[in-house]
Amino acid sequence: MKGSILVVSGPSGSGKTSLARSVCEELGEKAYFSISTTTRPMREGEKNGVDYFFITKEEFLQDIEDGYFLEWAEVHGNFYGTSKKQINEALKKGQIVFLDIDVQGHEAVRKEYPDIVTSVFVTTKNKHILFQRLRKRGTETEETLEVRLINAMHEMKKIPEYDYLLINDDFEDAKKFLNAVAIASLIKTTKYDVNDFIKEWKEIK
Image (cartoon, rainbow, N blue to C red; front, side):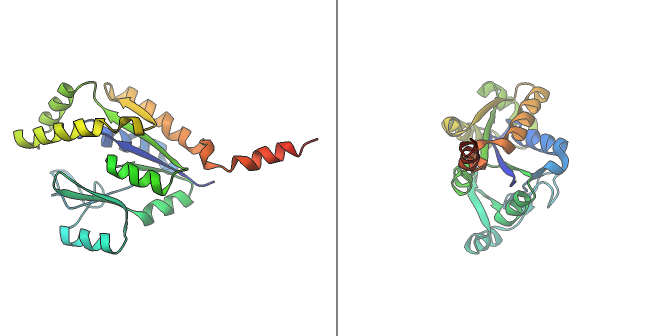
């Protein structure tokens, strides 16, 4: 049985990455967290090959030309992309592939793997909480904070395209819900040729 893909999206500050990584770690060998490639500067405490694969814009554009990415997008002036090879290897092992990507990436992945994708949109209860979380990170200027909130508003419009909406009001509760969705993604009917099952039962006399 092939694995499944769990897309986790949401605005910056929603806690989507922390949630996805935490659930992925708890699932152990059942799951694989896809590490994205980016051109944005490395933040304090981040590690290359752990948080992201950090490369130059020139290298990224060359990878696009070489067909390296399943999906890629330009966000806040930086490029982000997901490797095809890593995902396919994990799927062959029957793992749940966690993709922490934006709404554009979700569209591309669902188009490529329509039968095995489950998607979750993570956000806060309201924009004021999101603003507070972004400010608390201490990595944004007043201008970039405003840009992220405007982008969050546009991302919210894509919620109907997702299978689940998760309000990250309490981290532990949100983690339990995401864990349940991840496990359930392995047994979606779309992953199987259900006609084979139906045919088998029809043949019983």
